[in-house]
Length: 280
Image 1: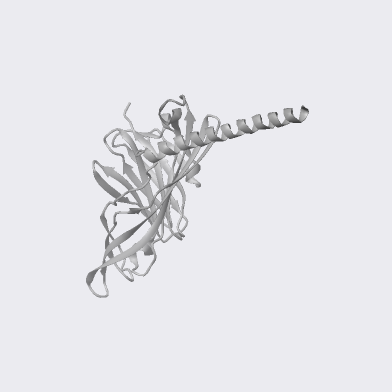
Image 2: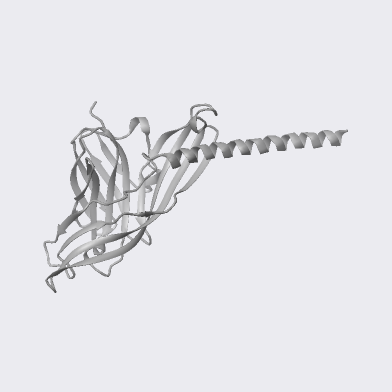
């Protein structure tokens, strides 16, 4: 009799374990579905690039004026890693893509403009924290996004790195440091800027021979601002957009040779900061 009782208890315990695992799997799948269907927070990439020209004040060995842009990305399927503990969920979204960097360069040795094309690959990453605030019958089994991190991106085999970013405005004095994907922001208390507010940016690179840009939008137009560089410390003033909305500011660092030398490899590191334009 005792043996039968022990077996019965073991079977009941096993049943609870199986049901518990099934419930966790269902919760994880619900969060994953939320992430894959989202187009605001987790689709952390720019499908096309802003276009602009740059000139050098000194005669470069290869080029002294350039006009460059990244072509449309070939996106791979994202990987979504989910972990659930009780009513809390953690997500890491990553996606690799390939594209081409186009550069029109004026080569002083020949006195002509040439077109360089560089193939490259990048991986973007962003993390989120979810909270179960509803019931199983709600959409996504009641899971909602509570916090979002900075997004990061870097080229395959990159050597450049953004050591830190200092952001100063009327209401903000923020210092971002790596790992940027571990810096989370509550959705109900994101960094806020007013429309057309001037924001001072200082980006610290891990090398002096680097170029840094800020990518934003002006309406439907993609805009790229170039930072001034003093020994790897890149500075500039950003005037925020006019229309109130949620956005990402893209801080873009490349090795200088990426743009200015034909044979140099594509070398990139980037950070995307989530923020709000809000005037009240």
